[in-house]
Image (cartoon, rainbow over all chains, first blue to last red; front, side, top):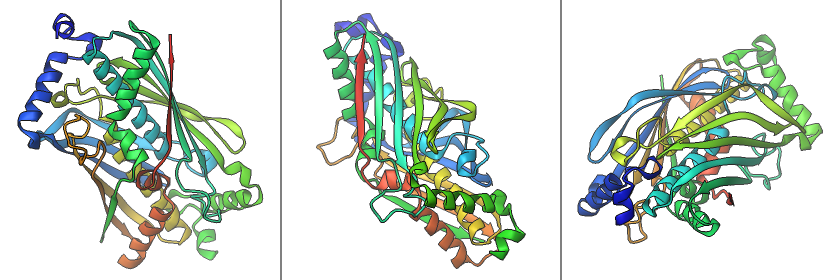
Length: 190
Length: 190
């Protein structure tokens, strides 16, 4: 592909390594088995903190280059101390970040240079669900999540929209939200 | 409830305000309509940053007491620069933080003093899905998410397990993951 040879780091994406990685996975599909992890500690009230350190992937234990900590809490109006964004807001970050990473990769693979990609995510939720005050018609989670992308790049609008659509089709977080994901909860006491 | 009068801040939860809030919602259900938001900006490659500033709730626009920024990226093994946790890792934080906040609230409402609550979350994902290399049998998202709680408090194991179970039943993030959530994506180019 001439384009990727001429622009090995278009959009900050190392396309040569990206394609080499995909080739490696084709030759050894078991390296695609990953396990991501978070460790959470309750602090007080609705405030807790998670750390992200290691994960399993490409047949081995791996470490992030640095450990990240994030805090979550409920705002005062929901009887928290507002020591961080709510858990449901992190879900909005996750879908934006996942789609955006895909946009950059897909655009690079298609030889499209991006100038700017921003997005806003809005999640509508009726708290009658989690308050246990609905007659069963109000769900606990978001009724809808809306992502609005603003994209500028050296391609026509149709091409840019096609890049977002391809990112959606291959988005892990989009799939986790729109299709049921099994969640198992174990409790150890003592 | 004698217990909550004696322990107005058990587990750091202001139970009097919590119950007053629930009463207020019962009297005026429209205050339960919330919209949470994130604003994301692409930085380079698979690296992007989200900010959480305001939200709508209790019939008005509200601001967090401080703006939080979080970064996301892919690790080097997935051709990123590892400038932050992956988007899918934030999903693991979200479920842990949501369930933990609920555990603290439910325990406080039930008069159970918690000493320690930690959890680990593991999400198994086969990247053949997002790489587009499966025959349609591998999904893009997590095959399973497993949350393991370690809880210590002044109650028997059955009571502590019941608190986690009630938190699960009222968890927004648990619902978002386990039941389909509509995600709408708009694209503005220019």
